[in-house]
Image (spheres, helix red, strand yellow):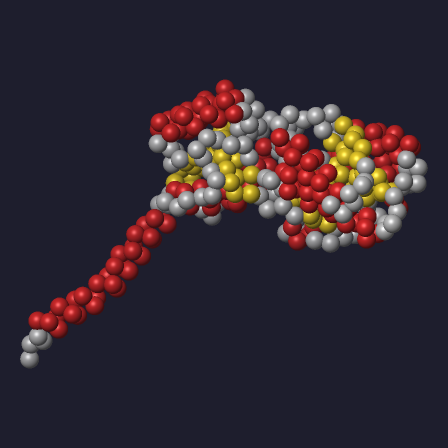
Length: 341
């Protein structure tokens, strides 16, 4: 017996949602299979040059993209801006000529960034900015004020818990006159953070002039003027913290000084065979902790954002790096030693 026409029609219509789901799955599978060509123009890969006043290098940042790209549907094209605005523009032009699907730009010069933004807009290429703004592009980078505030608050909380009712003095050590807003924002954050629990505490400044090793001599001289004074020390980079810790140890002031640093780069947690300031086994260290910036993991954070853009998604104007105070108690969780990997 033949099925009635109405029944056949209803059966056909009932199958449409399943068919649509199947087609959607096919489209999604094709989208996942598609490979994108992404260019990364790095700030500066010159050997020995560190970035953002911290201990990370351009090679650290590039390596993070190389490792992260291995599990993503991307073909990477790398450029080194070498800290040169004109070269950054030329690299962007080369990326356009290579017909990349997206440009990740890490360049500090605002005029060059404006020109790069203009050229890629004409070419119809989307972009994602790293650390420094690129007009019209979503930005990924640190919140320097927040990172500073975390350090300052940690120092103040330490003093209230361990030296209650005692007079405490604060010291800022680092490249305090460095150009740009990053250091200024960190200093503001540290100052406001430490004054939250200790509103009347005074802060002295020791400027290393961009040479972290000077923290040793500068702090040694300062310690001689402040005998028996409890000191909260905020360093703007981890290498300065290492040299400051050396000065404290040489002057036998471990009982009345504590340091919180910025960066959490290898200078502070070191390699497997090095003496590390942040290490559960180094119980004599005066370094309480360092605020993490994770610049050596940028690739793992940024490539998923780039792929979201390329697959039609949207991003907030500014995605902020995760910042946290890492101490000896949890440093192995954040950066396991090489011999544990």
